[in-house]
Image 1: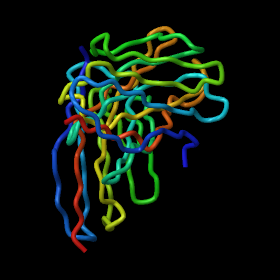
Image 2: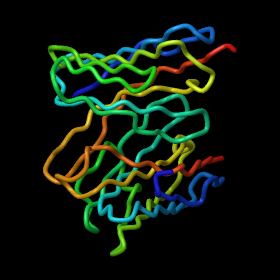
Image 3: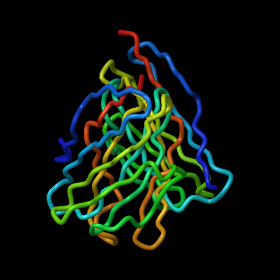
Image 4: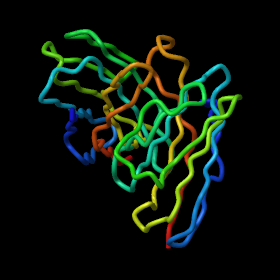
Amino acid sequence: GQQVMQIPQYQHVQEGEDFTTYCNSSTTLSNIQWYKQRPGGHPVFLIQLVKSGEVKKQKRLTFQFGEAKKNSSLHITATQTTDVGTYFCALMKNAGNNRKLIWGLGTSLAVNP
Amino acid sequence: ETGVTQSPTHLIKTRGQQVTLRCSSQSGHNTVSWYQQALGQGPQFIFQYYREEENGRGNFPPRFSGLQFPNYSSELNVNALELDDSALYLCASSPGQGLGTGELFFGEGSRLTVL
């Protein structure tokens, strides 16, 4: 079935450095969602991208959807300790009344103060 | 917060036992889905309920079953527990089909340990 691959699996940065996680698929994606999960917490929705080449910003976070809709990225500028957590990309698959998310393995971000 | 509540938050069972996990969806949401998240992994889709009927299932055996009630709350039941069932079980609610942005609203999860 359709899968999404995420890299890197782990990233350790100094506070103030930038961070990027990438999500790739071998097939065209209809959409991509991004979630953040804090340690011990639950996934929290960040954004959904649906258009080819789409770029969306949320403060220090920039989300991109590739032109071919086969990849996506999340970039954080000047990381802070509050950015710590695992960032997941997920593909929403619709089949009739059923909606399910297919998740990547996530990128765990650690930030040194 | 998301308005989705799950109980219990933590529980410990032994192999072969049965467990019931509960979820109250966000007000106005008639769709509930359940995910299993093993340590260090992404969530895996178990099944979804829409208006009290299961309308989608992931790659999980029949001993994983569920219910949705008229108030759209939901239960996940797991029979004959195995060690590999140890995981965080997440419930997510969403509005009916064609509504909302596609965002799922997750509860805090129920962490199950099977000994």
